[in-house]
Length: 166
Image 1 (tube, one colour):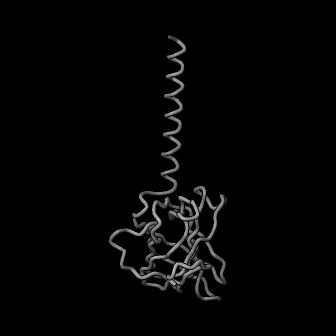
Image 2: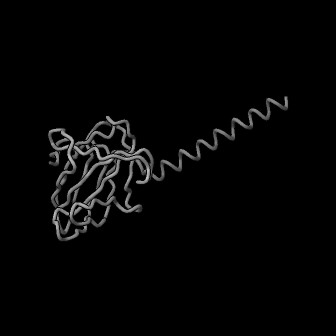
Image 3: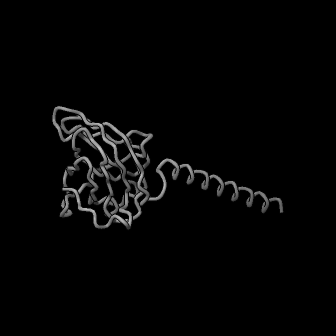
């Protein structure tokens, strides 16, 4: 009887440990995949791409093969944007750029102008990744940019008619 009790206790401990780890990962990667979350971040010059700061939800879960939704509500300069697939909730993990142009062809980045909403095609899920992150750089080669906007790793249903970035 004591052996069964010990096995049950060990099983419950394992379940509690797994549950607490899952909650931690979910909290780090942010809410639902179609929730549009605001950000404010700098963009570097000369094709030096920078991820959103850690307090701006830089990496989020991606559940579908849909495009990423991006609204660039204001920017001192337009921005080049990349969509990355990641294996973990930090940029030090395995990650690759899976940005596509409006035709679905792989590309280094797409351009998004200030005051625009755009869908960004990508191959994150096709490549087997469940996490997506954005990187930005200023479209002006000599000036940095301050970006304000919002994004969702999976296109929300009410945003399906937004044009794709190119």
